[in-house]
Image 1 (tube, helix red, strand yellow):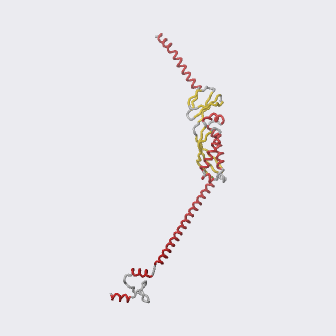
Image 2 (cartoon, rainbow, N blue to C red):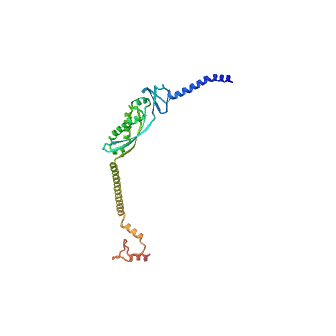
Image 3 (spheres, rainbow, N blue to C red):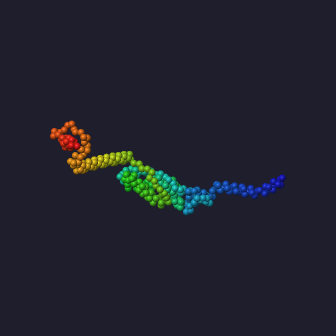
Length: 281
């Protein structure tokens, strides 16, 4: 039994060495990390003894020299940040504007951006925030407070273009700028409200005046129509027509009260001649 045990130990001893060696290597690899993992939506900035290299690592697993080389990961996805800034309009009204900026780091310039500016927080605080404030003030100063509202699209396009041109040299790409909200001083807000009320009242008064004018014109047209009808009626009425109409409407009875000359109203008929005509018949 002792010989068998010794033979087994001698047989498996090389495997034990390999197993122990493998575990030690794995443990050492975990500690010194001779590789770098760059996740999706990131770029790796390679530094040797703290010096930024020209090479930019893409997504995936990359072998590196431990201790000598380190990798700083930067997010190159589109990011959204909201900024709020005060600016004076052309008519010297203070306007507080809230902007939403969508931006991302140029993946090909990630190493230069990190070298010149720093990570995402330093990019936002040191580059984007002051640029947004300056571009917004310059664009707002060209318009009155009313034009800031009525020409919102034009203002947005100007801020968008100017911000892109300003930050492109840093390797920061502006995807879109949105004007989220405007707020004015309480005095100006009341002035706008009063102006809107006055405009509504003026429109209401104009509507009432137009309605009165239309009604007066309608009355004039109706009066003209009636006058024309009466004129045409006078032209068509003749004594013979009046006599005929009176006869057609007569019910065959004479009035009990007659005028002093014994004539019937509207038609002149002699009662005696009418009686003689009936006797002859």
